[in-house]
Each structure stands twice: as C-alpha cells, then as structure tokens.
Image (cartoon, rainbow, N blue to C red; front, side, top):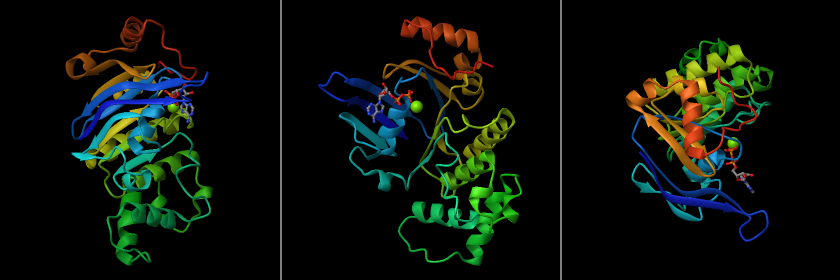
Length: 264
Ligand SMILES: Nc1ncnc2c1ncn2[C@@H]1O[C@H](COP(=O)(O)OP(=O)(O)O)[C@@H](O)[C@H]1O
Ligand SMILES: [Mg+2]
C-alpha cells in the first residue's frame, strides 16, 4: 500500500545546523496494516509523515502509494488520498464554521473530481449518520459552531473529517496528546473503530508506549531518522513496555528520551 524506498531528508544542509532527519529510510506497509510509531524527541517521526504527506519533497528516494509514484506530487493533491491529523485540536477544524460546514469542506477536499456547490438533504443524512457513529450526540448539532466543542469533540470530528471519504492512508501525529486521559480513551477507541470499519491503512505516532502496543498490528520505534525496532505478529503480542524499552536501548545504544513519554 505504501512503499518508502531509501528516503532521506536533511534540514539546513551544509550549515552548522545541518540535521539529517531521515536517513535512507525504508518501509513497506501492507493494505489495512495499522502501524504505531514511537521514538524520542527529534527522532524524525513528524518528518516521516511530512515526507509521506508531501509537506516537502524528500532529498533522495521515492514514495509509492498504492502503486503510484507520488514522490513529486504536491501536498494538496496527496491530501485527497491521505488523511492527516495533528496534536492540536484547534488545527483540524474551522472554529467559526458549523459542524455541517466543516464536514462539507472535508467532503469537498477529498471527493474526486465532481463539483460540490451546496449540501443536499442526502449529504446531510450521510453526515448525520457518520456523526452518530461517534456516539457524542453531534448529529443533533449540525448547526453548532465548531469553536464551541470541547477538545475531544473537535478531535473526534477531525478524525471523522479525515476519513469521511475513505483515505488510502491515514496519518495520526500524536492526535490525542493534548487531551485529558478520559477523552484520550474515547478518541483512541473511535480511531480503532473507524480504521477497522473502513479498512484503512493507518500510521499513528504516539508517546504512549502502552497504546502503541495495544492498538494496531505493528509497532515501529525510530531513532535518529532510522527504524531501530519493527515488530508485528507473535513477537508484538508478547511485548511489554519494559521489554520494548530494553530493546530500544539495545538497538539505539541509548535510553528512549522523550519528554512526554507515557509508560502506563
Ligand atoms: N522544518 C524543519 N526545519 C529544520 N529542522 C527541522 C524541521 N523539521 C524537523 N527538523 C529537525 O529534524 C529533526 C526531526 O524532527 P521531527 O521529525 O519533528 O522529530 P519528532 O517528530 O520525532 O520529534 C529534529 O532535529 C528537528 O529539529
Ligand atoms: Mg513530532
């Protein structure tokens, strides 16, 4: 589904601030694989997502999505096929627009071709049906301004917007990091539900090692722009937080350093 062939990205090349954020990075994802990604500060996790989403082009290597070489495809075009979510609940939605208007925008962004001039009764029913799947009662608040929603409600809505038209790939960059613990659980279980129901191939960066092991089908640990651990199947099923920290130390030759890391 996704193939990264030897991609590299260096910031500030040939300056004293030169930083190799990704170095000869290789990754191959199967359809419907759900990969969780952990790593220390500056390991290159967000750079990996930026490279896939097209926020910038990689210096070397190629990015293949569903058989198509998208290495030099601009971000706005990739966004039709790649859904993305960030940590900040304020980022994914437009606060002064209503829930319905936000969903209509998401629909417009992801829909292939075709024009979209107004929300039809059929669209509204579709939005309501999708919103009720969140179990937050938002289906009765289509005309509410999104700015009035809580952080968790906004992230749930952003998640819905990113998957309203099923993306080929969903990128979640610490999308629950700014939420309180109870809300984190809610948004994570919604994430699992939506990914499963729509058979979405998904990559999720998290600083919570337990959720990294509990969710998804495969876990990757990154350090200094490289993969230092890649586990799936039986090996992953038997994995615990202490063992994974030990493995990281073994492979990265240092302890996992992330100022927000959560072990429990
Ligand atoms: N746009 C940028 N300009 C300069 N340096 C950057 C930029 N983006 C990331 N970096 C650097 O690249 C490294 C990897 O960053 P990042 O991918 O954001 O790490 P992570 O998400 O794993 O914490 C860091 O050293 C960071 O400072
Ligand atoms: Mg990051």
